[in-house]
Image (cartoon, rainbow, N blue to C red; front, top):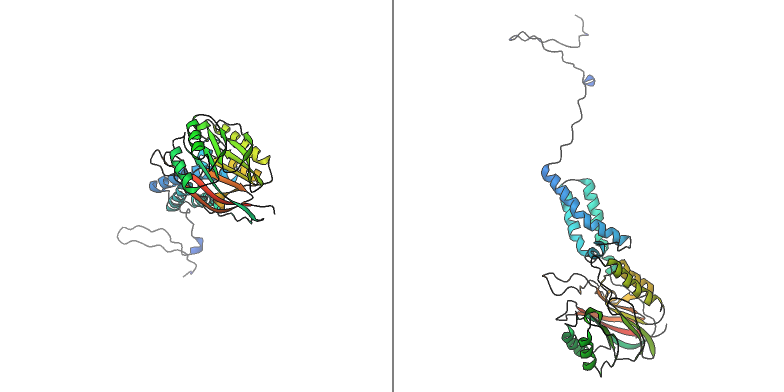
Length: 357
């Protein structure tokens, strides 16, 4: 019998059918089509879409922060809440992982990391102070909201006994109350005498000269104080808020503050007030860079303390827009004080004026 037979035929006894030859060589088996990946389940598809939508705002705002731009509405408004955007970014990462979408998960990690990085500029700033301390200076910066918080501010000033007080939204009645109440303790002042939010004043225990004012919709007076025989540049800052429709004016007025501090590049300086900007805004950081200034709150590791809003809808304060900026001063302490009647907390900075290096 020939042994080269490669297939065998099986006769079925019951039906009389002949089976197909069976190939006994595995190497000659014809491969079938590759199995397709299972389609995304509807639940996972919805989860992936939700993750993508949650990433849009944090990605946009973090990108603008990294590119050092305030862009246009709604970016300036959202930059005020940038650290809080880590919440939707983290939720997006969880949803992307649950949906088992690798690319989306990777993007979520990047966005969360970029958003969390926004906290880095708020870390304590170490500055080596040169020169001997010449005078201890306590400064208060307060927005009294159309003068409504004047009485509360008077109580704070009596209690804290500051040498300099920067007051925004101080109308004529507010100015009159402050100057009369502190005629002995703070006899010198530079003011913009207007009603509503346009009025403002700088009260000083030290003689003032060289009064000046930055052109703006709301008062921004400045002067030079003689402290321990040293001329110190004082400037109140209160630009328009970056509400939709006036972002360009907000940038322009912050730009004027920048020009004012850049015009005096040396010597001690204090710039304080309601900046309507946080350290996440490029226009605010430009002021710091132009004048070689430091935020006293950051120096004291208090730069995450929110100052606005403290009244109105049931929304907790979430952003620090009130600042005391310093040059040639060392920082002892920074505190934030409630001012009933105002929607802002006041900033109190306890400083030491330093002599020449």
